[in-house]
Image 1 (cartoon, one colour):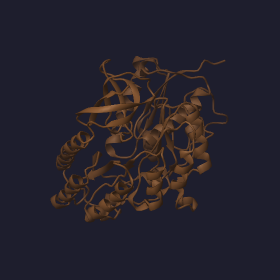
Image 2 (tube, one colour):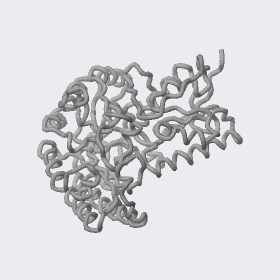
Image 3 (cartoon, rainbow, N blue to C red):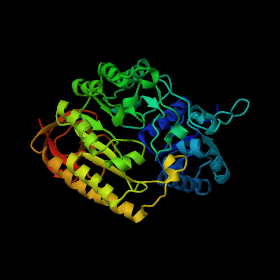
Image 4 (cartoon, helix red, strand yellow):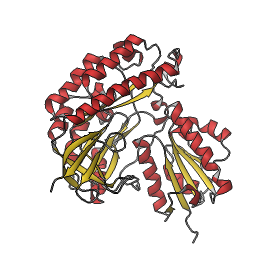
Length: 447
């Protein structure tokens, strides 16, 4: 029997991409592959790429080129490149990256076995047609979690039906397509049975879930069903879209005990003229009214958003209104991106007229403002006791444990630094919050 290769995995981009990586890992598991953390020790390396915006593609290309050097200096025999960038730019990659042995698009994840050289493709390996993805995985797909064993992402849909002028995702991820509630509950039960306590729901627009299937209240119904899954403790919803949030969704998020008080809504901007050019609509006033609907029904919800600065035509006045909006809303967590001028978007026809240095200046201004707000918001929590999901010893010192509150999602938000007390990773403990440390909180475990 042919010995399975040692495989290294590099997953770039968003959490939705990470789930795709986990599915490829699941297929590799079925063939007994051994995984290595150090690329120099791998026979095969798989790079799951991001193709969303220019900086992400540059990171992907740089990673591919650096990894390819291991064919000369290490034991690397095959380099496989997968994911969004392949789906979007397959022909260009085939022409310009001869170092790569195989490319896998979004609809070809099961082909990882052939691409890694573990088995030979019977009758050859057909290349998927160029164009938007159409696949939709289900709970029967193998999956190997790349997250800690107590937390997982649940991708409830693929693709997107919105026409935001800055975004090319529909051109390669395809139209919005929801998984069935029964399928998602089956996967959630399997994850919970394997020890997952925290489930993070993701999609390009989670609040659109079910609408493509004629179910306008699909997400509230799904949350109610997931709330009944034994073993789950926290359910967090990511990536709500303002135009698809309903009162029934707000009620479900506020009323179901396992759904945490966490509102993640990428708003992108607050000036009505910029939002109009983005083909999103809305305004600061409309955003505030919507967020207030959550705050009126939830007990101190954590609020997260992402914003874009430097969109074509953004004036000082329009940016000033965005800054005022951030100051008024007092988000707990904010991510800020500089605009990327993308082909296959309607904004590509607009003049990219905000200089890069001005974009960075504006981004810095929001982040400086938000740092102060986040510190103030954390300061308001001092003296309280919070439920915290323990995640283990701090990577930089054995004298601290780390964990997260329900208002802190993995990888994107702050954390809790614990300087007194013990507990097992993956367990929930009560922590008295005693100090702030920038975006983080400090506390001690209550006996």
